[in-house]
Image 1 (cartoon, helix red, strand yellow):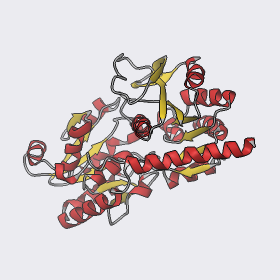
Image 2 (cartoon, rainbow, N blue to C red):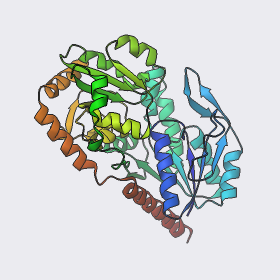
Image 3 (cartoon, one colour):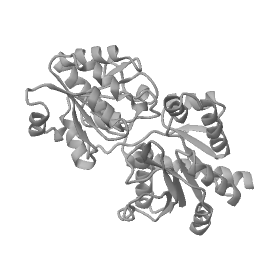
Image 4 (tube, helix red, strand yellow):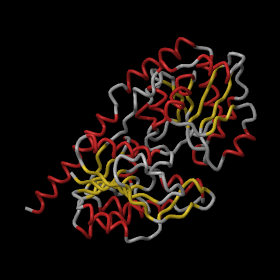
Length: 373
């Protein structure tokens, strides 16, 4: 198959959309298909040197107040790239701006499209501007309604999409690299560096942005014998450093370095209530680390409360603190949760999820052929 992946974000960006688009491109190449990626332009001209396939960059501008996020500008490159690649199918990754143009071009050229829902844009609108949820859903309905199929990453995302009038939805989760993220990377030297007094390490990994509610970690400062570790960067960084003066901020980490940090934690705490999936929860589970996460969105599918971790009411610092306190005094429970979490994700490899995605592509192509006949 000749597949064009139109994505709102692509490496060197570090986020769920970029990571999933990259893994999809890699898997398509491994399976003998021919992908092309269309993504917003980034500042680094060498950014695509290690990409698994050709990448077409569309002119873009940094998002005001959040320069790490770039928004594509109107461009004829999308339609031209689809035509030049002779695409059999268009994959729209988290479509909202560039993806809308990709959907329009695909429809004009008669190319089937699969739209992958990945970002709770209505929740982001509520967080950043206090309004605009209705407009966000109208835009999402337009692009997903035009697609041949929408793939949602969690049962909560399926319910949200259906509640807002979007149909032709199938569930498609995300893979996790269980070779890179593994319990055996636990590093005693790193732990001594981060917790010289032998404290329990509670870590967060992800973007430092308002919608992630990392500020809730301030609630665990009063738990005796606990040290907080924060991995990531973003616009909320300065404020969080002031709010969490005792925490260790490690900045952005990737690859094996990140995997070593994950495995060296005692508890992983995710705080964001707007996750349609939450890849870092899977990475923590693959690392054998018990998880505390909000009982909302993607974590509802990932965390088996009382077996692989604990689910707490979203936005509740007291509940988060009590969950940390309960695990801090229960080493046997932490070990059991970590082992169960690792076992739960061992079959969720990117290879397995990639093959599942290709199955969706083939079904869409068959359905298009049947309609044409």
